Image 1 (cartoon, rainbow, N blue to C red):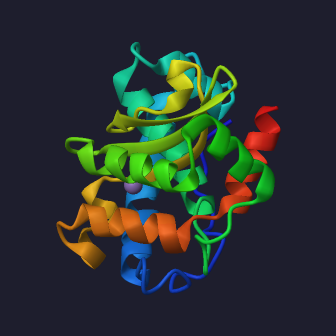
Image 2 (image 1 turned 60 degrees about the vertical axis):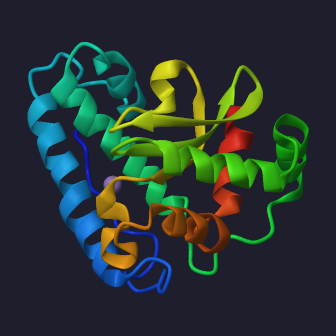
Length: 198
Ligand code: MN3
């Protein structure tokens, strides 16, 4: 297999004013495309050509930094576009909300932990809601690293690389994180990933 850039699941201007068309044009068409293009070049001859994207990410980690960085960022962004939707945020599907309440205390505590993870990730990286040994946890990772390489299932991720927010929020990463959580998250997709994880 080779990596392919998926279309955005909505129009470029569909997430405004929380994420502008200009941000999505750069982020999807330039940054994500570069991970796909470079990932394909590095996949060729790596010995991992026949593997699923998830396996390429897991098996290149710690062994082939160039391939890992691009494959992991491709995986992260494929999901990132689906972790957002127009008129997102708001009500969390009941079963997911119940899991959040039992594992993380409350939705408010989860929100605070998630925003804090994103704000305190020094430099580029991601904030995550993951399933780890059957329990929901909030984590963060640097650069392209993702929960797959730690044996966890990513359920929600927020890209805190500057390219994700600098056009719309300049240096105000916490404001971007609040807008993401409150007005962009596609909770149905998060619930679907939790269902798939069993
Ligand atoms: Mn990005």
